[in-house]
Amino acid sequence: MKKVIAMTLASLSVSLTSVAFAAPVDLSGDVSVKLARETAEGNPNVSGGIYTFKLKGETDLGAGWSLYGRLGGQYASNPSLGDFNGDTYGAGKKAVIALDQFGVNYKKDQVVYKLGRQDATVGATALLYSRADSNIGKNVFVDGLSASGTVGVVDVSALFAKEDNIGSEDNKIYAIRTGFKANEDLSWGVTLGRYQYNGGESTNHWATDGTYKFGKNSVTAEFAKSSSNVDNKAYAASFNYGFNDKTAAYITNFRVETNGDMGGQSDFDNDNRGFYYGVIHKLSENQELELVYKDQKQISSGQHNTKLEATFTHSF
Image (cartoon, rainbow, N blue to C red; front, side, top):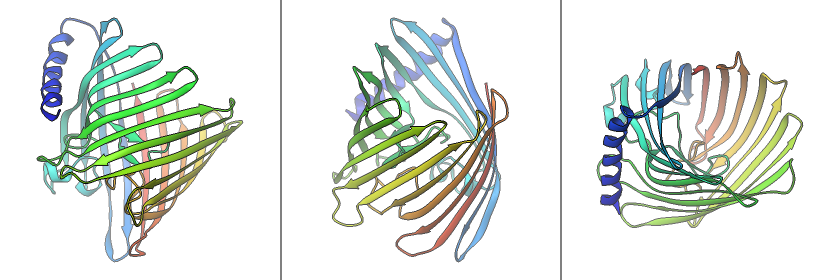
């Protein structure tokens, strides 16, 4: 299967380039500037600026098919704050650029299928697994098949993929989530997953989530557990408050035990517990400012650590 996926992705990458000259390409993307500061007890503080651009292209092939690709680039004044893989590019690398996502989409009825290199999350809050769209460059995404959409009255998302890692350590992820709406304000879902290490070991995972909306506000919670014998739980609960159409704030409490997520890759820091506080303000239709403060402790050691981020994003 690994060889088949690799050959498919290689041919898709070549096809995307050739087809782009024959058919119109819809372009979109964003540029962002982030100022960040991290602290950890017993270690020096780390701060710097991160400058990112993402250019996405999609070519319609007709009959529901399209080719997609993404060019991503980033400069981090302090490489340890970058969203790229430091092991891939080297510890001192400050700037990277790569064609980091590519493949084919197929849309049928209300479901979109994607085959190729792509970002991936598992769980309603990405509690179980995350290789997010904010990542940049090589060895930070997955190769495989995903599907998302609605089948009847059920929201469905699925992922069958292997990680694009350095060397041969391409671990595999299998996951499916089904979501249901009790009414316009209340929804809930169940996620089942399996994380398989390249060496053959694997863990099974399940999660349940729920969201309740009231006016411009909402509450979302998710709980997850793995088949590991110890340190096998994780949860996240978030309250979102909308001041108006332009400004919103949120507070999230989370805890991710060492074996509570898939391969230590929750969107929340593994082996940590704490709070996220955030404010998002929409400056215009295409511009947004977000301020986030993360206050957390490592579960195993009790080490206190924080993150402060201010991000300006312009979309096009």
